[in-house]
Amino acid sequence: MYILGIETTGVFASVALMKNREIVGYVKGSDRFSHLQNLMPQIETVLEEGGITLKDIEAIAVSCGPGSFTGIRIGVSSARALSQMTRIPCVPVPSLAALAMNAALIDNKDILICPMMDARRNQIYAGGYFFENGFPVEKIKAGAYMLDEFLSKTERYDRILALGDAVDVYEEKMKNLRLRGTETASEDIRYQDAVSVVRLGAELYRKNGGITYDKVEPDYMRLAEAERKLREKQRKG
Picture (spheres, rainbow, N blue to C red):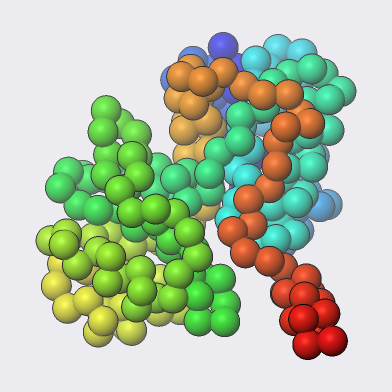
């Protein structure tokens, strides 16, 4: 069984190909936010690495948000287009859970895995997960939070591991707000990656199957800045 994984919610787009439980193709971009130009060539590259064509793919796993609004749109639109063209089912993968999946590479026992993405305006997208049977299970609801609001929800846990680009922005403040058991992920597992998307996507596909292209929706978790300003203007008007 081949599953294609697409990740475009972060700074660098990446694509991974999994056969059964083995990664047989992988490529990650080196240009910041160049998803539109690079995603399709990346998909072609991993298919070549796997020695297959699109018709051999059983499902397309795509990171559906939150994250970069433009990146989410590119990834979801690309997955939908491929699915519509080939009739291959899609597997929407929550981006925070996929980021938490990075911690499968380390000793994650008895530590709350906290993917945290910078949402700007002093907000973060975040959630809390424990690993069960090799996969992240949500313990703190994924959503948009103020940093102190989210960290207050982690106080009952002795140890947390923070991943994501919010660590780059708020690491010092985070450790001041939560004085005990606060660890930050090393850079090799800190950011979004298609390998985690395809691994988690394969598990979701095994449990729930896939969906048709027209049912795949982005999950922004909050309004885009332009839409937020428009609604404020309409409300004031």
